[in-house]
Image (cartoon, rainbow, N blue to C red; front, side, top):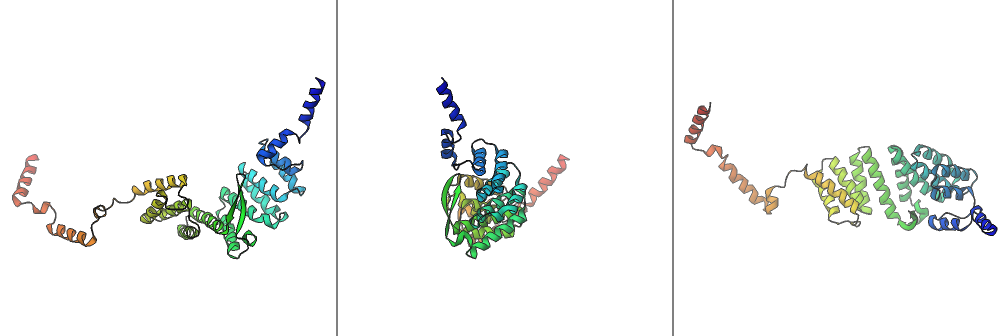
Length: 299
């Protein structure tokens, strides 16, 4: 009995035991007992965001993985609706981070600005990032970079990144109701790397400018799956909703569109109908007199 008790105590008191190995595998938390490792454990395993923030601060102040600690802390703060504090933290401490981490910090800042409604700051930062791209300074001069989303790594091309940033810039202009600039930016983004989401946003932008026919054509392309990301069911649903809204705004199609008749024939037909004149004017005088007499009787 005593031996079993000792084993149990050793298991409970050993932070590097089997439980640790399990969460290292599941959550990709680094090994060790540093402030950053404890912060990641609090964030991902214990689900204690407030405790994680305290430990991230300790990691930053002690110089322990400052790049990752600052970025991760800002993400947790955003989840707790402390975005203003996260913006201030990045602005104050990004100077301690490496040059390679600045791009990812900018991406976090863009999300934070969006969350706080800081549209002007968002536009300024997006323009700065786009400027770095056309100056050849983004991606450390490479054509691709490795990105991570939901724990998975994937390659992003400079072309894809440019289109993504333009899409964010277009949406920022939409929030400021600057639909002319939003349209210009969205069209540039679609020329570089088209996708369904940006097509829907471009359609919405045109709707806001009362350019319904143009919007309809773009949204129909989404619904019909003519774009590269045509498997995006969410965007298809969104495009269909916009089209339903447009049908309540647009007049019904003219009958020549349904019959496929040429313009010259339609013009001739309309001219003939004009010569015939209104139906009421062709009634014989006797019927006009009968109608008048009937009205007098009714009185």
